[in-house]
Image (cartoon, rainbow, N blue to C red; front, top):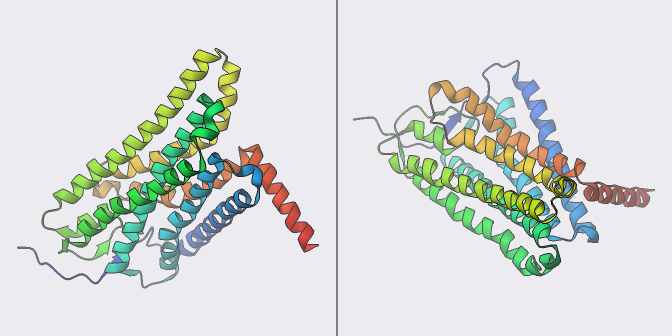
Length: 312
């Protein structure tokens, strides 16, 4: 019988054990985190302060920016602290809390991206009824729904992971607390937890991704059948291109993280994918939406001009 121990804390092994690289990695992640915070905060300020951006599309974009700030803040501060500290432990409660918010915010973003795809579908395929269909009440409901659903989805993961017994060294082979690395330290029956990952988590991500793609297939089909013009198709899809890039980046890293089985050989690639998912994706969202969107760029320039006038 394996030795079951009461776990009070875990040791996070982090990204690298090479001491010389850690300050360099810290600076890189600090820059990425600052760009994420200020970039997404700038989008939020512009959307709130500019009346011309008070539309469903930008309402959901503001929600996404808020999500990205919170999502990266779940893992990045602890990761940066551990890069400079020799005491890389996280309490059991802190670990379960981090796991909960990671899945809570990640699931919320997955559903929100699907809703943003639906919003583009309505705007392009039903432009005359767009403001009627996407009324403020429905937009608030569609924005609040993902938070509500995802909270209970994440709670399911948190409770079932917290009830596990741990009988191995409490060295977590990752830079943050996630279900798969914790299952490697657990003893006893973890079949239910694995079923949740490979069935519920992957199933939820695949359904959300499929519905998002379905929105775009409907858009393409509608434009081809109605206008029979490649120029009209190109014009409409150019407005969706930024959202499409974010969708593929988000779901691509989710799929590579949770669909393949965990093994010792895949630990380093999984860490690299997790870094992209938790740090790079949130910082790319404001850059993609800003540089590919003329309305946001124009609104940003107006806001900055007003701030400069106030300062002068």
